[in-house]
Amino acid sequence: MFNSRTKIKDLLAATEMGKEVTVMGWVRTFRNNQFIALNDGSTNNNLQIVAELGLLDEATLKRITPGASIKVVGQLVESLGKGQKVEVKAQALEILGDCDPEKYPLQLKNRPTLEYLREKAHLRFRTNTFGAVFRVRHSLAFAVHKFFNDKGFVYLQTPIITSSDAEGAGEMFRVTTLPFDKTPRNEDGSVDFKEDFFGKSTNLTVSGQLEGELGAMAFSDIYTFGPTFRAENSNTTRHLAEFWMIEPEMAFYDIEDNMNLAEEFIRYIIKYAMDNNREDLEFLAQRLVEEEKALPQDKRSELGLMEKLEFVLNNAFERITYTEAVDILLNSPAYKKKKFQYDVSWGIDLQSEHERYLVEKHFKKPVIVTGYPKAIKAFYMRQNDDGKTVAAMDILAPGIGEIVGGSQREERLEKLEGRMREMGLPADDMDWYLDTRRFGAVPHAGFGLGFERMVQFVTGMTNIRDVIAFARTPKNCEF
Ligand code: 4AD
Ligand code: MG
Image (cartoon, rainbow, N blue to C red; front, side, top):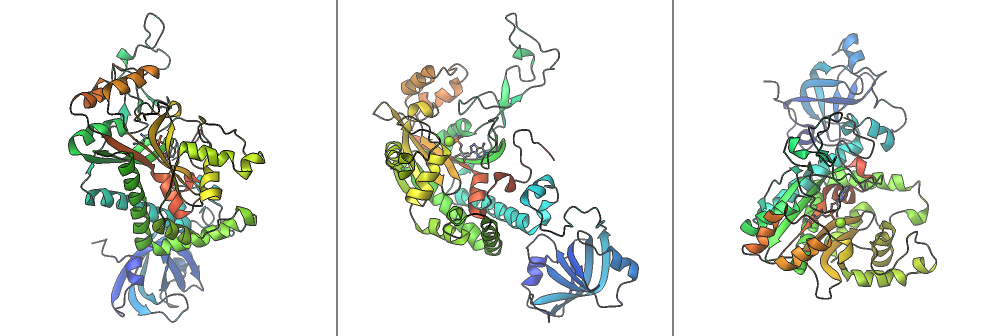
């Protein structure tokens, strides 16, 4: 049997000395022709392998290079060296895969930059930074399922190919099998989608919410967790063209219940990572300190990564209305000194500089903003009695900006139809959605958490491209 090995994480925690173990992994370093630092991705901590002089022939020694994969059978012993409690005294060592040190991209004298590693994304999992980030990402994903499962939510897998635009923002990637050169046309010159694979115009989903609402109208509580796609041409550190979103949808919930659930959920998954990935988070906290050394003092984070996460666990999010947010901005020193690039007035869509001011300078903690103007929000949000605002809620997080977008939904058929007419949405195509308002409609609410933005928040990584395995961004779709 090949896979009778022990993972390095387990060996490093072992207390039973003297037993024979098998380990496999990739060489990080090899010094004095004797000491191998071995890593198998289970932890950033390497296992020291000691190959006593004379055990290996000259040819094998030459093949133990950074990146090479090896199998070692040996004895687990207490380590006399500094920095580790145990090590493995090799009895047999086999090279599984060679790695030419001249060509290996991670074989660099200087520490590779994050930019360089983005180009080598197929290998970057082998670095300490990405090892830690992706183990934390895994834990957060697991915690998402655990949180909702424990609360009795049904995990609903909504379609990736769809014919609707859930957000009505028109930022969709088209899905088609029509030929580019001989596009079938209608008499008026428009594309004849009846000839297309699905017989209609289709796209990649921007959100599973609309289908999620259908589920909530039967199961009460559902959540989705899947890839979503946005063809917005935003080249920022917070936007991906393909990102993962978690969208819970709850029947018999109002906006207040929705906010409470979102806060509880965010705290739960952060706590799960802190309890299960402390070593990785401490490593990432230190990485952030190093990264910020290059910044002027006033641009550095006030709290370290761990303190920031602790703070979020222990402090309620600030809750304010959009109108209050605008007032705070208008009265801010930043506004008076004309520090904002974009102007502020009631009705604007808050720009990222405004959101950052609110969370980073004014409140210094996550903020939930409710009651946005209806003109800047999606058609499905419940209209407030003032006739101007909707029961929307955005959660803004320090360093990230918007991390959650959600709302109570418009469950009143006439109001919803009215809004769709106003916004020019095709009510005929949405009949299935409107049915939920015809057959036993109930007050309901939900939200969407951008998973990568959450991973950024927890790991302290500044660029969203560094928290997803293979980033898809404008003009970039490698691997
Ligand atoms: O605010 P959004 O557009 O809301 C929706 O899609 C709703 N249907 C959610 C719901 O109520 N069920 O997106 C939700 C979240 C944002 O707050 C942000 O965290 C993330 O998704 N997001 C992105 N993340 C990465 N790259 C992008 N281009 C993103 N666009 C949105
Ligand atoms: Mg939003």
